[in-house]
Amino acid sequence: MFMVTNTKMVEAALNAGATGVLAAHNYRHPEALRKAVRKLHDKKLRPFGVNLVLDFESEQFRGYLEVCKEERVDFIISSLGDPKMVVDACKPLGIKVFSDVINIQHATKAVERGVDALVAVTRDAGGHAGRLTAEELIYQLVSQFDVPVIAAGGVANHDEYKRMIALGASGVSVGTAFIATQECDVSDEYKQALINADKNDVLLTKRISGIPITVLKTPYITSIGERRSFLEKKLKRYKRLKHFMGNAMPIIGLERYKHHVVGPDYQKIFCAGPSVQHIHSVTSVADVVRRIVDEN
Image (cartoon, rainbow, N blue to C red; front, side, top):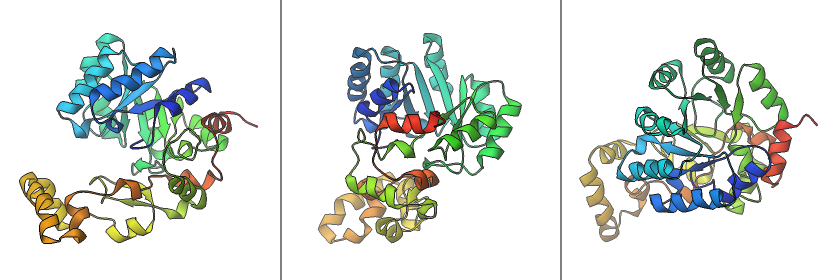
């Protein structure tokens, strides 16, 4: 989870009998990711993985991938792109590769590339969400492919966990439920917003990354709207113009266009899925794992 997941959360999840994933893009450079991976390895905590966002493919992305290879992480979850590069680089080393998918077309390509599992990102996922319900997507994936399917979206208690397993999922990927925990370093304001929210406070917006993402409806989100403006689309296409505008803003007083040029203020964005309705207090990662897995 962007600007959320940390080594404390992954360590606590592993100690509770689950696994965890470090988000590579939470680290400013590959060596910072390496340090986090080694911190967990030094404690002999395994298995854990790293999430690589392929849409951000760059020299830095390649650096993250090299760290994952050199440090022999147990698995990688690839998101927002063709996983071929990751599969080709990691599978010969025994590193498993899972791929986030939101429809059968994405899943078909991922399976053709040789991924070890599919992460079914449903419309109830927090952050970058899909369009299909769990019933629709998991059924399609389980019926058409032989690789394991991991359900992502909407799980914060045991009933939802059981429902995903009954649909044919081999496991669940959980995000939102772990944000309001003692091990998570987000602001108290973020955690309290999750506690106060219900599923009707969650909306889908393209204003953050250009890709639909679920967030809590806050005054900041309301102020920037739900769709990218004409200016943002132009700036994304013409990077030199964006650079010029960014430098010119302080000089000519275009502060009100800051969001369009510089980008969103991530400190004011609270990513979450509809499962916020099951969050009622700040607890521990271990308590969340027990709440989801244990019947009582």
